[in-house]
Image 1 (spheres, rainbow, N blue to C red):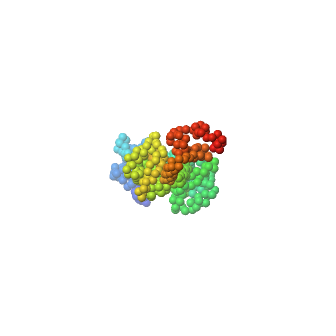
Image 2: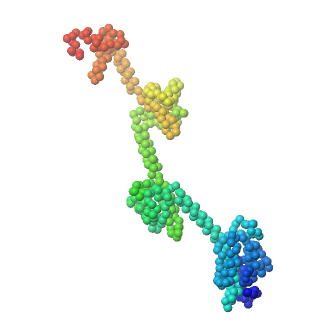
Image 3: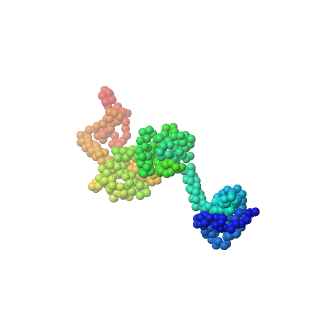
Length: 464
C-alpha cells in the first residue's frame, strides 16, 4: 500500500506549486492511497469554483467530496479514471458531459456545466506515483457555442431544403455548383448528382455569360448587382425568367454564393399579355368611330372617355372624369337620363336610345346611344357609345323639307311622281300620284296588280 506523503518541497518543486496555485484551471492533487484517493491540495481556482476554504477540502475523500458538490449522469467513472492513471502511470480522461452544482442529487440546477475531467500522474525520479493531478477542463462556453452553431446550421439546412423556391449554392471562385435544394431539382430538371457536376454557366444562355462574369468581378457590390431578373435554362433548354437574390458567405473554408431564385416567367408572360391587352384596348378605345364613355354602375361617375367624347362634348378628359353621367345631358331631362342609365346597367340592358348631349358651349347635340354593362376587376360599369346624329338629322330635315315642297308643287300642278330604286327595285309613290289613281295617302296597294290594267296595253312594255 502506498503511504500518504506530506506535500512539500521534498515532493514537488516551488515552481510547480506556484504554477499549480495560480493556474486558472480548477485542480486538485490527490494522494495515491487506494482505494479512495484523498485530497492533498486544491488550487485557488478550484476553491473559488466550489466557494470553499482550503480546510474544508484537504484530506477529504475525492469521491465523497465531488459527489456532494456536483452531479452528473456518470459520476461512477471518477474512481476508475483515477485508478487507471495510477496503475498505467498515464493520463486518463473522463469524456465531456454535463455536471450540475447540487447538495442533493434531486436538486439540479437548470443550466449544466460541460466539463472534461483529466487525471494525470506525477512521477518521482524513480518512476513512483507521487500524486494524481485532478483537473476540471471547463468547455461549457465552447460546447454551448458549438451547440448553437449546430442548431443554426440545422435550421439553415432545414430552411434550405424545404424552401418553396429554388436555391443554389455555388463556389464563387470556380462557379461550380456545390449544393441545391429539392425545389431547384424540380424546377431545372437536373438530378442532384448532375447539378454537382456542372457550374452556373450551364444554367445561362450563352449570350448572357458576359453578364455573369461582370457580376462576379465586384465582390463588394455583388449582392446588389446580382439582385435582378435573369434568364435561366432548364436541362431541356427551355428558358425561364428568374428573380435572383444572392449573398456571399464562407462555407467549409471557401467563398460561396447562396442564390435564392424565384421563377417569374408566368408573371412576366401575364404582364405582357396584360400590356398587349391594354394596348389593344387603348387603340380600340381611342380610335373608335364614336364617342365612348365609361361610368361606374353604382355611382354613375364617369371614369374614362375617349378623344371623340371630348370632341363631342367640348370638354377635356380630365374635366369629364369624376363627373356624374347626367353632366352630359340637359338639366331638364336629368330624371329621364338617370332612368336610361339604370336601364343600361340592368340585367336586360337597352340599346339604341336617342337623346341629346349638352355641349360645353350650351347647344344640344342629338346622339344615338348603344351601351351595355361590363365588369372590370370586381366593379361593374356602363360602357356607352355615343353616335353623333347631327348630320343625319340635318339630312332628314332636308329630305322632309324637299318632300314637302314637292307635294305642294304636285298639288298645284295636279301631277304625280314615282321614285324607282334601280338597285332594289323599290318604288315610292308621291301623294299626287296616289291622288291621280284614286288612292288614299296611306292606303296599301300594289302598282303591278292594281294599275297595270289602267295603262294602255301598247304602252305597258315602255314602263315594265
